[in-house]
Image 1: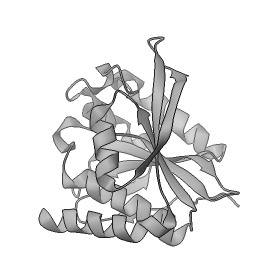
Image 2: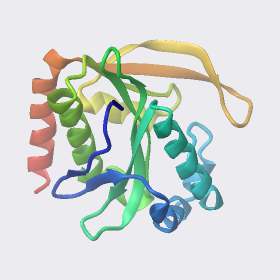
Image 3: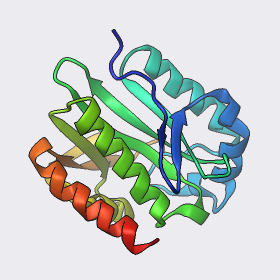
Image 4: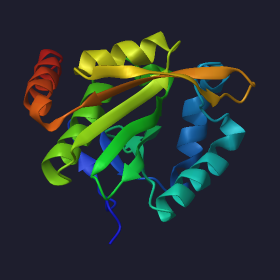
Length: 196
């Protein structure tokens, strides 16, 4: 059996739905806002590469290493993507990653709620032994967001990946463990309640 199975997760500010090619148009519009793909420290598809990125993620899902989601606003518009990736079904570990949002919803409660839903599903439904986050060491915005979640820095993988421009990426690795989840959950619920 494939693990984890596709699922829809719904909240007040966002829904996470299985990614399909039907999301292409919305996501191309989303990545165009603010020229997101031009950031050197991350990999976000250009508008004309969104369809290929969706197909790449769906291929990884077929191979059992990723569960990709489209991030929808309450009006049903796709404003970003996120995934469970580097899926380890044997040990029940996932990484939450390959996440990006259109500029207008960055640093809003939408991201907080999406992380809350993904973490709750991972720990409460999938019984994960760890949930990991990875980002470019130089991606200060992403590192700060991961640390605000309550994830702990496990370490830095130096010269871990070659970026599309040929530069080498040092990868900051973070994780949350099951016994840490109640405190992380309380913190996320507090942040969401503050914004209502």
